[in-house]
Image 1 (cartoon, rainbow, N blue to C red):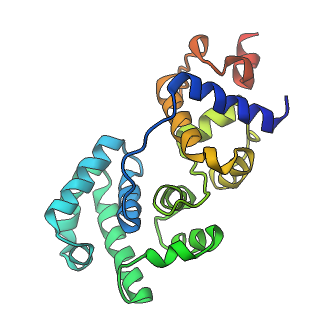
Image 2: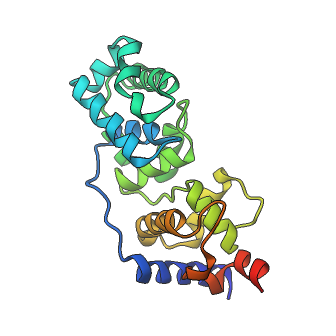
Image 3: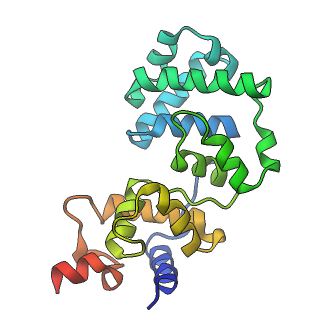
Length: 221
């Protein structure tokens, strides 16, 4: 089985196991960008609490941009690394305003995937994963986000070269899966990484990808 066939089978088995995953309602572009920055190095619950509190504390993103730094840091405390994320978010908002004249990002809808990705990644704290999430879930553009779960699971299976870094994996894995499957593949691999393919003690015995997995074949046979 070649790599493309393996990717297709991974998608099929995870759909059979977890179903076609649902995503929360798409956020506006800037909301998704800020939410994803808050999600870095924390879990979804902490991210959501911080995002909701930030929106509750400040009426608009302009208010966040112009606020006292300590107020923003306190509002997002639950996301962790608030002393880094608060100033980073404010700097991002100020840079967007300086470049665009406002915080309206609808212009990205007219850009190509590559150009939109490049524009987003010019900002400190916006790497390929953050940019890809905004592209896929807010802009409906074909980008494949790779988080730590996806990096781990695809590496163990052998879908990507073992020494490929996270940034390279975005393009490589995006070429393996059809664009129309990106959302379900992304969400289902994450779910599989959380429930079965754990970092330290993967539950290989119950894994639906067992017969496809290089890690399992090398360590159990």
